[in-house]
Image (cartoon, rainbow, N blue to C red):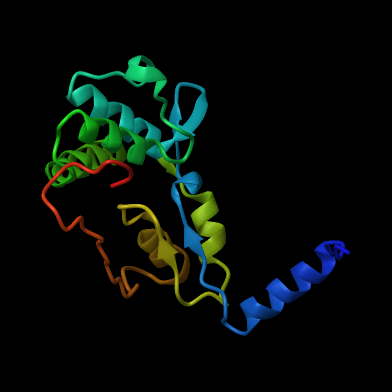
Length: 167
């Protein structure tokens, strides 16, 4: 017999775990939006579309019915380019350059990151994006300048060949 889910108990447990320092928040691309016209769009959708455009592709005209999935846009764009014969390691610089240009041109809505940074029980954060927006936001919310101890970790593909799936 299945035990019914008790949302109140879940939240009580989660809040206790946070107070005990047993929760590490992970910020992903879904928290990062930029203004495009009158609407907010995912930052990494803009980066993915520009990356595809750089190599003569369009997100709306991908082959075989492929689409850029919500919150997986950059991964999907890199996979499309890898299947087209591009080496993944050769895409790091273009992605970095495009990201830097987009961040210089547009304002990222950092309110979700600001809310996360304001939770003082969190003293360790992880991000699943290749930008430094979370660290800069923590510095802005908690400190009077850069004080966040940043540790970068990069997963690399061992073989020098295009990936068949995710990079």
